[in-house]
Amino acid sequence: MSLLEMKSISKAFGGARALTKVDFSVERGEIHALLGENGAGKSTLMNILTGVAPMDAGIVIFNGKTYLSPSIRQMEQAGIAFVPQERNVVNDLTVYENIFLNRELRRGPLLDKKAMINCTRALFDQLDVNIDPMETVSALKTSEKQLLEICRALYSDAQLFILDEPTTALSNDEVDHLFKILSGLKGKEKSFVFISHKMTEIFRISDRYTVLRNGSVISTGLIKDITPRQITQDMVGAQYVDRDGYTARPLGGVVLSLRNFSGKGFRNVNLDIKKGEILAFTGLAGSGASEVIQAMFGVQPAEGGYMEVKGKRVSGRINGFMRSGIAMLPSNRNENSVIPDMNILENICIAEYMLSQKKPFIFKKTDIGKYNAFRDMLRIKAETPFDSISALSGGNQQKAFLARWLNIGADILFFDNPTQGVDVGAKAEIYKLILEFASEGKTIVINTLEIPEIKKVSDRCAVFYEGEIIKIFEHDQIDEHDVMLYSTNAINALGV
Image (tube, rainbow, N blue to C red; front, side):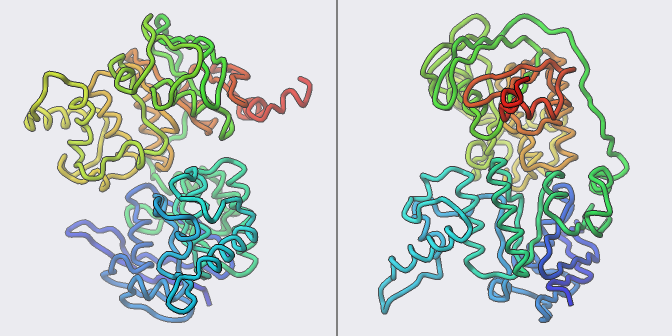
């Protein structure tokens, strides 16, 4: 018998049907990839499984027990753990306190701090995780917070783990480490639902797959019996076309220059970027590429050299870079872009309000007109401008934040991992928008680890290694193998 069987699951929200007679199962000791575009029904299905949302019809059978209306507590006690894409840690607590939150060890009436620290350290040692149990979580890197989330779920001794985009914030080495952990646990008959948009990882770690589209199962089977292209076609449907939309364009004069630009994590960066150019930064995590693009927007200070925009030096705070026509979409939109207490309209207009000296009042009618124009231009899928920004899918959130910057007339756009955590359909739309902006004369710098993404859109690719640019490729020279040789500095090891 399967560890999990979900049979004929149906769910509707108002008049909108989210799931229609969905069958989904997970075997013991299996990693099952649950795939589909944002809005396909993956989250709704997992919310039903974990007791967050009630189902309208169907049954859930877990570990031989049938549930007709499972609750959160029932499913946690049954042995299901959910590791969400968004960080769900308490920053003000220590690492060990997060591990034992709501399940503290006690010695009589008092908390047994020593026992909890020792248990946390033993868990980390077992999984080869190098995090200090006494460290405050706010001091951890994003990748360490992700590993903490996974370790907290593992400590619960669950039988089934739902991992929602678990590698989003992890470096290549950390992904290798995570997959080693999953493989070891799979050998102990632990099971996983693996939700991801990264095809290379899906095919590397998964045993089976299920594709949802528009709330229905489109295909399911062994991962070895299907190709990435077939899965993508199942996810997106007949409209999917896998093509490189790049076309060479005449570029204008230099609009942005870096001269011996140096800071924390990078040094002596020299670049000239032309009007209408799409320049990609890439390199392994920690290579300095992300740090450079952050310093180019004033997120962190430059410590040497200088940056010129349209012939004028720019430095200091973010506001100064914004007034120079520069905008940035950061890699972690939930920590650095989303203002959860504001609706979509307010999230789009906030940059204008901050910059404008002449607009002490909010003119809702004018702002709604702007929203409607950006919604049509960027193809933002939202019910109303007054919906919560959190109600949008990852891809539509990215478009809303792009509208935020276009609203202040930005013509130099920085994208730090712009398609992180968005589905293949939304990725294609973002690529298309980037190419359209470049053809209109906007200058774009992208930082991404995805080399196929670089090939789709960029005129040039600057490869970083240990804080410096080690190689610049022109578009027709960009090759995944060659870029990786320079990213790892293997090119020097080979003596080429």
